Length: 216
Length: 271
Image (tube, rainbow over all chains, first blue to last red):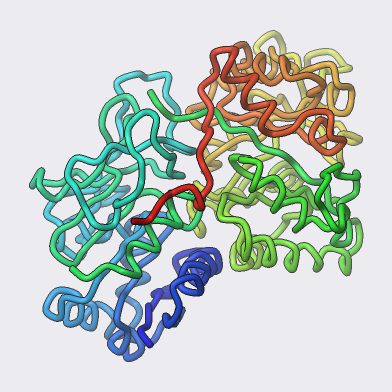
């Protein structure tokens, strides 16, 4: 039996994330999905998922407020090499810093900053909200089997900021919205998705399935 | 630009039951909002909106269960509107699995509520319902006021508040999206109020969902092309089986509106 810890730090709607993970875990068999605010349970888990909605600074403050959580994440993900998936603001928190409202330090796992979206076409609405296709900029196990490009599957995005990586090699996929926005980032055992896999129907469920099978 | 126009079916729910009959062939129970939601999900709806029209407090509690059960089966965004008045209402709906809440009367009565809600949960989950009707009275305030005023209580109660000015103010307060409903057109099947939709969509930075009055598939196209809406919402054309989600999407695509037409998970081969 292996296990996935979905970290509960008061940043949004974990019910749908848990249900999507449970559905794919059921199909795979032998995987436990655990929604938890307890660093000790996160330490015990085989895979770790960090969700997050709202503002960067609020989410970071929320994560900081869970005693010992960031230490366990550093220990298990960075030093321990456990598969990690950040989603939406949970993905943005992997950056060096966020520049929403104030400048806030992130986890610093993916060098880069989270910056306001500035589409070339001023008519485009902010937030970037709804279904968009993605384009893989490098192959990745978590995007395997997911058709990309203009005729590919769609992912559900809701965001006004995106992670601008310093190192191009850590940008795994982009989406087009009056210019390229970062859709996925990654390195080693770390992966982040700006869109919501748990709300992205076929594309999202496949990504979750890939994560449950991932051996980085 | 590859962001797609969203097609959003709306289900009116009272005491845990769909109010208008939903004509899906394969449903065991057409009155169960969760079954209807699953059918819309399978048909390729881009989001789903539940409008809770329950009047009583006891009736309202059933919506939490509806949302929670929907979230177990449908992996798409869900918005819940109707009777959202407190931070606690929002918290309970989001915990049950809703992604967004649509707020109407509470936003009109206390605009600061939108600021507090957006600060607490993020702009992305706060939708303000702009229920507007042509002014019946003189334009109090002079020529800089628009043709429409805000109504509450399902379109029964005029407020005298200018609809376009209200929409802009709600976005400043933190609304991440506006659901613009023409109360003149609602239920008439004569199409969206395109001038209202366009005037608001052009005045704000956030996406606008057009609502109220859809009777034909061309109405959906018009809402996007002429109304400048980012999403179109309809209830009865889908409820009564006049059109399917698939037919609506095909029509939109054939008329130059970019929509999402994805394959189901089962079709994604795993070697």
